Image (tube, rainbow, N blue to C red; front, side):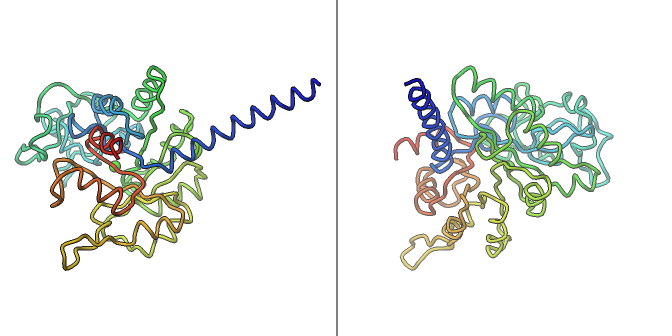
Length: 329
Ligand code: CA
């Protein structure tokens, strides 16, 4: 009798366990939305404010680009330079290198926190790159560490009861190696401390550098979900090699389209199909409502990406618009 009850309880636990792990798989195989540099269409990219706003739009993942400070702290910033989003030229005029760039890696974490962060601009003309976005030079924003951002997202996961993932990118690993720093090792250690260790944890790690991403899998033995980013010049013949260590690829949206036929209809490249055959997901970048790449509307651009090209996920500066689009499909 008791043995039967214990056996039944055992079956229930196993059943729960299985349905939970299946949920995870379903989650990764539906169309996913990645908040690109946060809600960067509305607030200066990669600021905590932009991440909090993105969170409230309920994407599946929020992205972190990572560059190390002089004292080895991973900073959430897109470029290895500070020139295009901060007031570094005013605050530390003597700290540029011979190429006139101000490098994140030449500043301690404490120094970086003294900088003000702005909407992305051209440092020569001081003009905003996206003129219809948040006004350049207004309000007060700061840089922050990977740890600060994880704690924001995990904190919101706790207080809202949601489960939004992180999507960190290792930036310019070769540059970091030349500077004597192993950015991947440092980032993997922090991710592990915050319980991002395997493919079932809500984290996807991305990198453009194929040698480094392969090293992350094979030498640093990461069990995380890995996405190999690919630029236009990358040869599609490398897909088979990518599939030996990566779970997905991240192409530029222009790589999805081959051209137009005689009737003006789009012809799609076979990149997505090939990746799917190799068991890899495809998360394309970057869907911007204010940069439509000759497509008449943002909805049309999303339709082309998600259903024409059949991508599995999209990096977007406008997470709210993509959430709305997928909800209506
Ligand atoms: Ca990125």
